[in-house]
Length: 424
Image 1 (tube, rainbow, N blue to C red):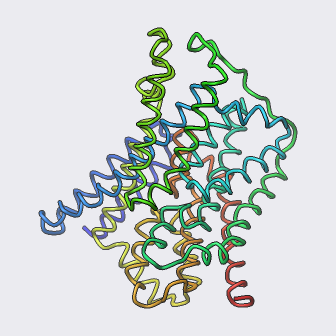
Image 2 (image 1 turned 45 degrees about the vertical axis):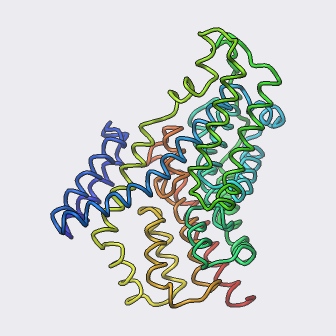
Image 3 (image 1 turned 180 degrees about the horizontal axis):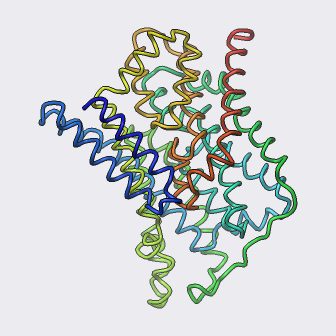
């Protein structure tokens, strides 16, 4: 069963990658893969223990899914009030290269404060207001994934893996910023520069449709929902620090606040208009199949973790590779295929009593696990969210973005090694 699980996972992964030519929705494949993986796990051990493990993993995954649902709904609510016009009206350039740099830099720094998943969702919503052509928008969305993951890697609250390391006491705030900012910036700037070479000309902005819900939102409504929505998203890491509750509780609280505000704001509007600008109506536009894809792929990886595949992989790396820099690079490459959370969790379990706080292993682990997920579109939460929102095909991303992301990842890894050996 142990080997069969690996075969089933690889076959499922191939089907997900070939979603477009096979015309089989990736969400269906992911859910089927998850069920089959856990069925195989059930044949390998004690049923009660396996059920407990499944519930434990489902609890962790549910937190991510609720966070994703809440963030996507808030972004859709801002968009339904035309709130993003506050930003898009100020971005006047139509030059592709200038716009690409502007979007990437905003994403990079916003991700460090917010987190890479929420930032990716917000920036894709912005791109829809700026770029009409879907295929052109995909290139920008690809850079949003890279920039969001790079920005999240140098911040203790920018990525779920850095949060794990930070809360666990493996890294400290100022040290992780100081040691990984330059490698993280390089992992974004180099793909950005390479992609810029291929871009020429101007983008065409979409024609705004204010008649979709029979009304144009007022300036007050746009400003209130935009600033309140973004403020509540930014409040999530603060909420987590204050309460030690999981981030999804903060996002659900923010969604609840916005729900009440929009209900009061639009209570006197006609019945045809209200569903377009309140949470009860907007939530129907959230891409549920993408959320189910996320559920399936994370459950499938959790099955590998439960059966011991990931622990065996970590032990093999330690035995046959040895060099900590190389091990971290391999973990980064693996995080483009396997979710980085169990990979980092496995590394923490292996080395928790070996290296002290702020050891270079933990710092490079934060960088590699965070940025390595950009190499493939399903390698990070940000990538999965963007994939769902923009319907980007796995193979399109592999052909057009993956190489640049890989070059950036390796350049940042080399920079970290040089900094640790020469400077620090």
